[in-house]
View 1 (tube, rainbow, N blue to C red):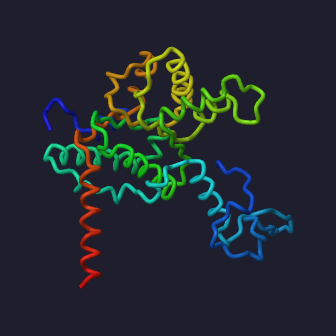
View 2 (cartoon, rainbow, N blue to C red):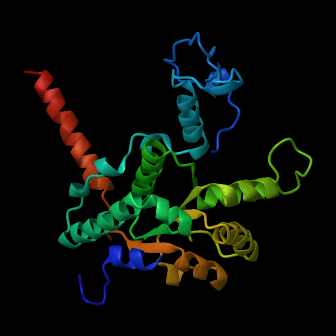
Length: 283
């Protein structure tokens, strides 16, 4: 990398529970019935003075319920539900410059994950950008979401930028409908421990879009909540209110992604694997 490009990890260094009441239907499908807690996750016990108190059952069902709820809340696309940071394959990139870019990106991401406690205290998120569609940005943020849920028990929410705006618009004129109100949607997005917004900046520029995103991002900024973005644009090129861009810049590590689409490479690899399997069966 050139001298003008400060090491991403160095830049990061300088930037210095929730469980909803669950019904038994959200338990893991293979969960066997626990006779101690009757599948509630809690059992009664007594202290040394004979005073009764409630404690978590050793069967582990409560942790499974928490995990199931976290995955449901996250709304990670099905295609990426098995994706993890450690199985993100950098070998799919063919260009030398792409290999170097993803190497530096992975180095910064690994540091961020390893220091997630400090990152959460400071509200420092990540901003991935590449003007090339299919460069792996969405796959990476979904890998991070799974990693944060599986290994760090974090509450994560994934959504696309267009979906957020569509959901907000769907509430207009439906004040008395049984669904969520606009205020409830924005509040949910503002309060999520870690919010991932995919394809940020692809929307048509309108005053109301600026207004709604300012509400969400400012709410997260003031409460030091982590936000992770993917975009086709670097932060300085976002067509948003300056207040939005400034808040993102202050609380995000901006990470360039390769300017190379890997969709074709992945599709070709899968095709060759399938052909090899068919040929092998035919022997």
